[in-house]
Length: 477
Image 1: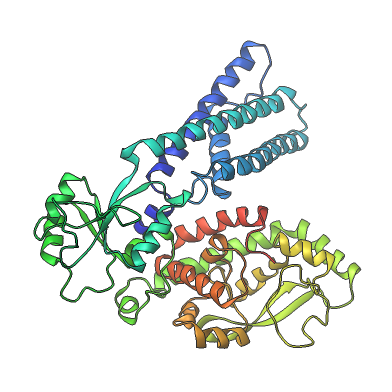
Image 2 (image 1 turned 90 degrees about the horizontal axis):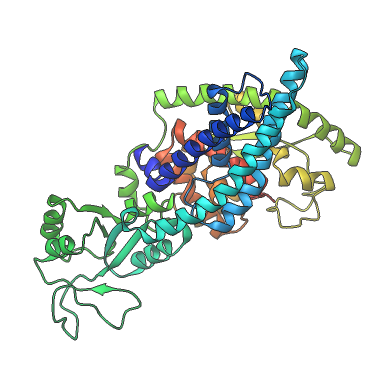
């Protein structure tokens, strides 16, 4: 759980969410007093407690669309698109709650209350855009927010880390260079820490016995061991000296898992899986997860009735055929089960055999195209969850014919079946829809990460982040 916390809700994101919630709270308090001074009589409910609820509700809504995860919270274009969607939606929900409360209680609606909410959210939206721009500049220019990393090695693993660090989501780490192992390079370096001028990035060679001193002088906080060939070449004694002086030593697979939120599919070995913690579910985790699934699925089943009933009517009106589509999928321990979905294709969609869904698939009906985009077709799967065939959060279940093909081509593909499949999952919120062998391999890397690091916290994060997938149509086809 601590690794997940560091990956998903890292230091800058914690500071960011806390600062924005604090600012929104005092903005609402200040606006309340301004309204009172202008003799705009506010409803007495708008005290400190109500304002606190409003601030927390707004912050939660922002978290649901990814405003605090690494992929978006330092990307200004993503910030703008998410603010323009979530904050107006929050305003509508708050005003609707006030209107329903007034209607049920029979009280006369207080227009100042609605005006207050509009003023607070509008002002917060403008201030948030300005604040985020300042925050991004502060992150980029403040060394205290960046972890200084030295990469031990310069092969494919180092190249992967280089590519990872160049993206927006990893602007909080600074790679100071790549340290070669082995003999002194040619031409020899004139002093400790000399740079090779023929490398695309800082490429260091450190004389034997001086690695700890180099890390101390360059304020290296973490050394990542990314060398594929270690037999007789890994400076164990020097790495221990670094560790004893406070420099963190991290193996490549662990670093990649922590920073990318996935395992490297090309680096999975039997020994890594054997000695890794948390694969599979213990009895306590199974009980907690099953209780969570029953509670959440029951709520979803009831709360979505205003959506599912009209959807069912439209499906029956548009085309002949059954309301639900039943399809065999592979579940826990490889056992098949029948998954339920709202039918989104014509009834003879697979007359020529099973195939993956394609972009702009001609077999999809007009109603089906819409409900697939916003994931309404997945709602009947809560019945599968209540039956125990699925969990609410887990790897997406695949069809047996595709599982047999992928398992023959992708090592450890069947390991995703050690837990129940889910309606939504870590791969669904981090990787777009894919129907190729490469896509299946990439999704497996996220599935294995969630299996290894899963728990109630990750399930809640995945459920919240599914909102952004629905709104921005990620992973749907």
